[in-house]
Length: 391
Image (cartoon, helix red, strand yellow):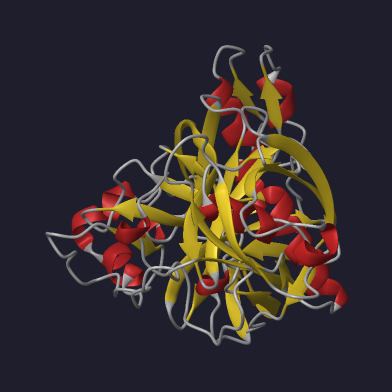
């Protein structure tokens, strides 16, 4: 678990209400985001939002111009693990031939699949990334990439640029949706309903430092990692795939090119990649996107308890207070209960409990396993709602 003393805000500040779950002594103070171009404090660790100011200046620098790929026309198709007839493809008049990827190159295969679906997003704040998830023009991105913007410029893999409208989002989850007036776009496949496995291949695609179409690889380092956000911990995917400023809003995919999460932040001593990056799980991002598009509330789920980590014995979240009439109260949670599991996910402390609660939609019924008087009990709680900033 990441030390919460070493974390900072992952997205733009907003008004907050009652937290879904709070430690008995209150969560540690949250620092304001540090500017991307500023130096990291040498004696502190910070989770830097992958904000994107001044990245255009980096791309424009003649010292790295040669690093910018000019031949990125890979959208004509993918042939993986076979011998393609490239002469026939080239003479078909359909443009560039399909990309031929050997069967023993899973990262290259995944990259060829996902690259046409990843876009660059340019705003007044700088450059970020996005993922086309609906062929009719809907794009997932990070909320901090489009914060304060009504429109942005969306640049597709082939270099075409169009205006995109910011439909909405929430810094609580650091997820937003952009819409472009296009149809028939190459929508990415989302790995919905699947839990990534620690150690599996993870590939990050986006525009680090403004360099569009950049692919890096690693593994899933942890799942359900509780990382402090706008209103408390959120359950995130952790990866050691290189993620840098400009990757925010881009895709973290599996070996089949399916989206596992939306990249949003890093844990860094230097301000750049230190091998610890975080992505919003795709189930959470997709749920937020559906609510944005349908105009539904973006409030967080609320259990209605405060507590702390167990100081000895079995790990869990020790309940110190239960709000009257809350979801926890109605479900029968009592002061002194030790919560060890929620909907099948292990709870080793109060941050885990808070993060798991926020990963569900308000109104969802979850099973909470508690230890009371030495006995395990399973309680069903229908989560309430705490209103979120919908900026």
